[in-house]
Each structure stands twice: as C-alpha cells, then as structure tokens.
Image 1 (cartoon, rainbow, N blue to C red):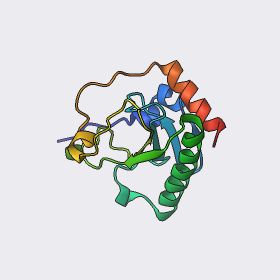
Image 2: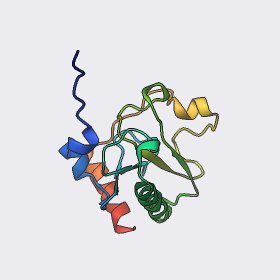
Image 3: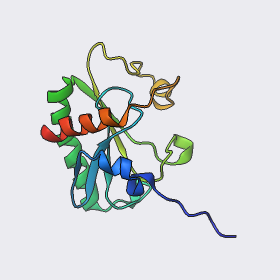
Image 4: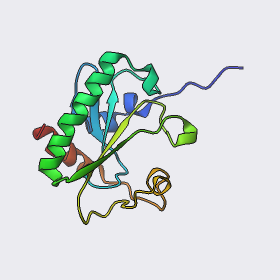
Length: 148
C-alpha cells in the first residue's frame, strides 16, 4: 500500500510564502490566516519537519531567536502586554499541518481573542474564527517586518 504524498502548504503555497515577515537560513515567520488576535504569528523552520524533536539544535536556536525578535516587534506594533506562545504536536493535539510551527500571540488588556486561560478553552479553539483577507495579512507582515 502506498501512502499519499503530503504537500506542505507552508512550503509550497505561494500565498503563504508571499506573506512572510522574515525568512532566514534556518527559520521564518508569517501571520496566520485565522488569527486569535491581530498579529498572531507563526514561526517555523525552513526545513519541513513535523515535530520539535526533529529540529536540529541550530534550528531550535534560530526559531527561539526569531520568536524573541518578533515579540519585541509585536510590543511596538500591537502594544502587546503579554504573549501566548505554544505549538500543537501531532494530529490528536490539534496540529493540522505536519510542519512544526510555533504560535506567538500578542495579548493586551481588552483584546477580543480567547481570553480564558483554562487550557481546553485556549487549545481547542471553541467557536469559529473568521479568515483574514490576504491584503490585511500582508500589511501585518510588513508592519512586523519593519519593526524587527
């Protein structure tokens, strides 16, 4: 039995690639198309691997360095007072694309995203979220990139 070939949208979709905030040798980032709050950014390795354990030590350093720089930018651009940082690993844990990606959500008093910190409320994303228009996502990518 042959297994179906997976085509990673993060690696191959030109719409996703076009919304890149920054792309470095080992890591890159872009705003997600279904943000919990404005500025919700994904940070991922350039190499397509599904899990944290598959990352090289150098990729881990690059991802966390980019996370820190992105947080500084999100503080400036979105007046972030705090952050939610997480990744889902494995389909059973909610990972919908098997390419490791770290979610960075800028949070501030009065934002309209998920605000309960009970893990099931945050991780399982109750209710629907609207897809953001691509032009808006490109603008968000530019604003964050310009403030790295």
